[in-house]
Length: 58
Length: 564
Image (cartoon, rainbow over all chains, first blue to last red; front, side, top):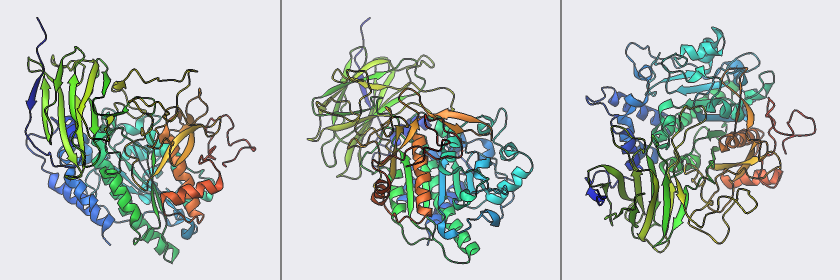
């Protein structure tokens, strides 16, 4: 049985304009996201924003 | 501003927080709102707030109740610590997960017993749960002690109020370091917010306006990413360093240059060049590398060969992504081409190979892969392999992949580890192996040296692009064959022996904080380098003067040796 040739499968063009290392992060977090969504996500973002305000507001 | 932009870029990690943090750090129902108490007991404030410097440490498993971080009266010198994995026993509007403890709260928790009582009260010593403080030793214990640990019997420690952030175990256990970005970014923001508030409290207690300097130690690193200072963490730190209108004096970020000089993780290829990529077998973690073109130049074109000799040309000439599969649909690699920094920015080709340890019958082939750069801009391309290891104290390791090329000699003819690159240059480089967290314009980058012979670079010290071992160096090894230094552990009586540039950076933090508290005028990296050079050329800090014996050949415990 011989070796089959390698095949290139194009993937969707998501996030390609983003300016960070998302390709690796995407692979690392694959399967971590909750199927039903995170009910505390908005509250956590709000808290992070409050921290940013405390740090950088005059 | 960069910080607001960066939150948007961490969406994938934000979405994964419930999987990355223990449930106790997320639960909030029923928790009371925390009081806005003081940062330090009045007796723990600096005797002269005008001659003090705030020291911040961002690390893992920091023993905030250790005697080295207390005053002679037993009050905590830790003004505030964000324990990202601690149980949310109370709520604060700007703490998204875990718990913040302030100095008087630490005093109260420790009064209930020994330091362990404080760690248990925060849920950090739970068998079967979060147990980061149940170990005898930790990276954070060593780093924090070097940066700001003082003998509580002496008053000097009060000149250095501390801030700290203890990062989550899961993001540090991830071997490339790529998940830590959001948490480090949030930690930096926390440190700035609390340093400003602490400075206001110091002014109130002193009865006059003071602007204490802030020195932040970040002894963590990665081996791949933008090497031109455009990475988010570098940009944030540079932006913060430039701000002059706050309650604070000068702000410095001190980072290690990393430990990968001899690891063959960095290469340079011109068009038509080839290099081997050795991927070890039975590796439970993925392997990845990044190929960067120069700004404004065409994107590189890559051909990949698997260890069995099959080759494929990656058909990407503009931003896009895809997967290399074999004829049976098994995924062998994922390749993404980005243009970072806008249309005139740098092309970045990321190649990610799945683990070689079989799982559910699937595994990438281990062995010698080959990378062939069929097209590249006139400047060629810089190649960086992602690290695949963990901090000391973490069980299990990834297996590090590395570049292979016939022109690369790991050692000199006499068997020594080479230092900087020298002609003729092959593709594998030692210059430019410094951590990619250490590429900002104003960070103080610190390499490791031997205590004996003094000032000689440790073989592993990552090098800046010009071949230097850092802006500053400090000893982290006794000699070329006696590695490491003796350092405090988590428990008051525990000690550990560790090596690496992670230990050199906090020595520089300690030295810089002392110099600033004593009135040194430094506002930039150049000022700091000049400050040290004026005291002692070459720029090595020499033997540290620490409140414990560090295990070097001529320990500062002996009267004939002092820090130069």
